[in-house]
Amino acid sequence: MRCPFCSSEDTQVKDSRPTEDHTAIRRRRQCAGCGARFTTFERVQLRELIVVKGNGQREPFDREKIARSMNIALQKRDVDRDRVERVVSGIVRRLESSGESEIATDLIGELVMDALATLDQVGYVRFASVYRDFKEVRDFEEFVGKLGDDLDILDPNPSD
Image 1 (spheres, rainbow, N blue to C red):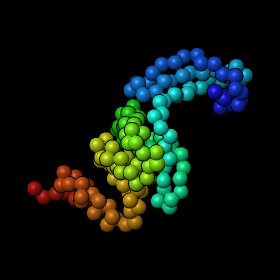
Image 2: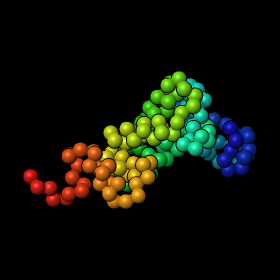
Image 3: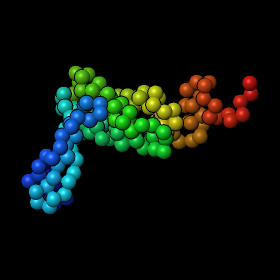
């Protein structure tokens, strides 16, 4: 493993332990060259996935893009980050075990939307606004209206 600080390839594992959800191994490493310490994660990869974008472009799947998108949608929300990590791992497992090596971005987006709907309604709406490319307030109104009558976001003084 190359040191992220000095690029030396002489690094040593000082500690290894499974992550909380047991889907990866967390390794603490130290560089013999500069002495810096850093953490790496080792995960099982069932198959090599390729993401097919809407324009037909293909690129290697990157689980961190899903995690980043979800964390942005959940920014300043009271959602446990370990729970988000478990959800991301679940999405990746579903994609890897689907039997397909090429995955459309639409499928990934819908899986993230489904996961966010159960994690946090505000994060769900935030993600949807970007994913579905909301242009006007009306787009939000229509989307939130479809969520159900249990949300009173549009009418702060509902009449009973």
